[in-house]
Length: 265
Image 1 (cartoon, helix red, strand yellow):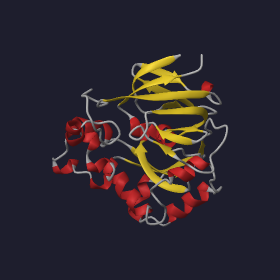
Image 2 (tube, one colour):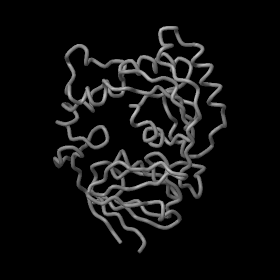
Image 3 (cartoon, one colour):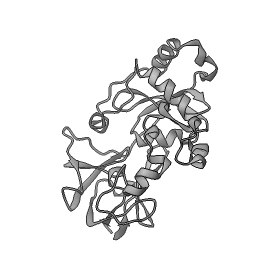
Image 4 (cartoon, one colour):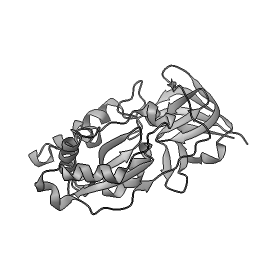
């Protein structure tokens, strides 16, 4: 069977083992059942903006044409540097977007992906964010009313805990076991008193298992900017990555690429 259309991010549902779906055009294809089988994704040489549909030779920020990249609020610098939010200055690109995505409750969390990291996410997206990052464990440590305040707290905690994921180490599965609750206690004990009202009571750690048959000792990254097709036995799915026997494909980075997905009958 085959499906043709423009790629979008991998979608997923939290379950005992995370359920993954590849979005190809209007089709949402359940992938877990193809684990251990050979699949092929052929790049058809076209790209289109994931928002406006404009055809483009180059996409930015994982699927945006240049006009959308330079005008949409979700592509502004403050999305990756939330402590630099400028909504209060009246210079936000889209006030409605800000009200729905930034001026809403956010979690500051600790997650174990390649190692322990600190991060932020909208309260409504907790599990989805952690799965996107390939976290095997996660726990929210504070709930704050705005994205800007979450970003400021994240910067403060990042003086002790990294705020980045090593994607190669995350995919290798060679993650050292840690006591996330104890690290949480240490982090919270070091915070200035002004944050006390936002700190959450200790709670259970969220845990995630991914559809993985094998892991790779050496991680090679595939790119449709360098090759027309990715094919082989699918041995795992984690974060936004499809893991084949001889390399990995970051689906999110190829959002907006037109492909033909070929699956076993």
